[in-house]
Length: 290
Image (tube, rainbow, N blue to C red; front, side, top):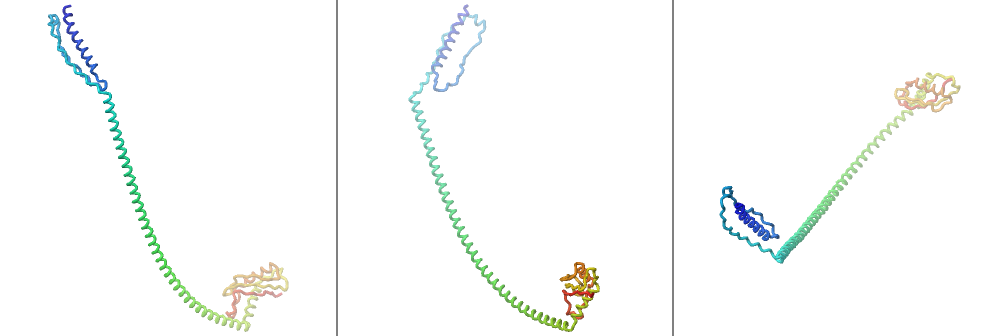
């Protein structure tokens, strides 16, 4: 019981001290600022044994109360409003300055773009002028080349025409000379033919062919007395027959075929005594003897 009474006083003093410290901390807290970090209190303690507790305790004097720091003064709301207003004004001034700088940059950008566009237009106009000059120069050169080409072509055509006329004159002279030679040859040949005809060689030549055809003719049963047919005979030099055609005949088809067969059988036909009397195309009258 004595020990409990002796321990009650220090315990009560310690509890009271902690309450005072807690109250000072609550009233000194600044709600407008973030709370400072809590620093743990350093409490010194010592181990007490039963022997020490059984000994009469010496009442120690009360500890000297600690001086609590004065709470920081709360800021004035009007001052805070003034500070906030100044901050807003500085922010607005900064935004206006930035906007002015952006406008200046935009104006400068437009000026640079306009200058660049004007420079491009000048360069394009210069290129267009150079292109037109080059085009006009090219057209002049082409016109000059065309004029020279036309002059050269005109001279060439004139030379060709002159040469053609000269060649035509020579050709006409040669053709005239050839016509005269051929005419003379034809006249001479015709004269020879006339001489041969007048000599009776033509009649003997035709009669020999007619006799050769009649010897090779096989008289069909339909042949009538007084048969008379006109036959065209085509031959080549040497008397070989290459064609036979009945022009007119008073016989039937069998008679016509028999006469054509006789012509081919008589090939080669007799040749004339005078070569001038040879004719490729002969017209003969076939009148067989009864």
